[in-house]
Image 1 (cartoon, each protein chain N blue to C red):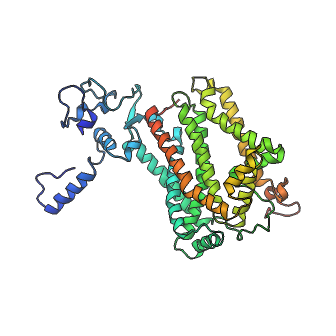
Image 2: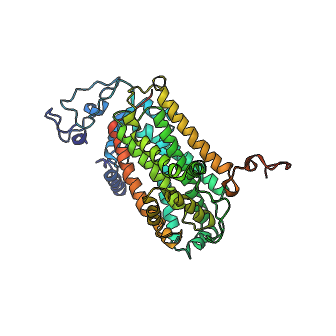
Image 3: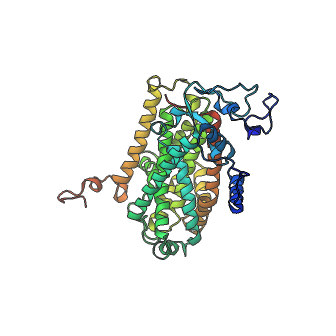
Length: 243
Length: 194
């Protein structure tokens, strides 16, 4: 809160003014203060001010949507650290990963977290979809948000798939070879799709740079945009609440 | 603040008045009675009579705890288990079996069983399109499980198929993607699967 006139210590008065200019309200001591805090805070504004108590029971939501978003943030942060060391070149990529494991401080644990969080996100997004289906939460007025959620699931899979190639080890290259071979079977467009995706006929430098750009820029941006719309619609359509 | 919450509510007192009891956010809750606003300004959604709580801190707190739990879990896993890293990529040496990432291994399993055009293209496209269209195809307005037996049965079958195909691909397919019990059950004559 802003400085009271009784504050005699000028340093404390100044600090109080700074604090008050950033946070318009104090801690949520009462519901009214809490509501106004939520309304005036950009980050808290992602949620509605009030929700039905039954809608936020952990046994109802299992926190799966929130956890998926949390994992996305965690993956963005750990991915950012990895980007400082990683060069998307077939000559250097593998050595960069080795350096991350054995040379860079905390490199190993950051890479491990990025990997396991990616797997966890695929699982939480799937479970979130199952949760929403079993509770019929996709029914009007939320039909379109289910469609966006489906696209988010696909984006998650593609993000994970594109990241799979980057370490440039035997596991990566052959998994992507097998994965992209599936695209080949589409009538007419299949071989062209695979060529477009790999930037060539085989998994080589062309594929590595394409997957890298997709993984660190294109797909996260698409995912972020879809998430913004997804959350906005959750907020506007309201929470479904208990059955 | 009042300009945001109660601004333009036509009671002649819009502006800077900080009169908390008139906040529209407190309407419709048991135990609060304030003067009704002429026009509901910010929170336009009608709340049902069910009990509501403020998301901050009630929901934020739960999300924080869930995120913290997940973070600690991942930290422990990351300390204990290293992400896989095999030999440097070599296009001359094909590993046997060559498997897709686990979430696409189900597709690979389909390719073993059906013609490629069906398994690689028709099935996945159908699943994606059907999934997106689900809310538009399901005309049943009820959300209660006892009214949705068909929908729940269909989705459960789909989930079971998807999960079992992934499990088969990961745990029961080895050399040349052939069926292999030994990864799970161990070799006959050996005491343990290792």
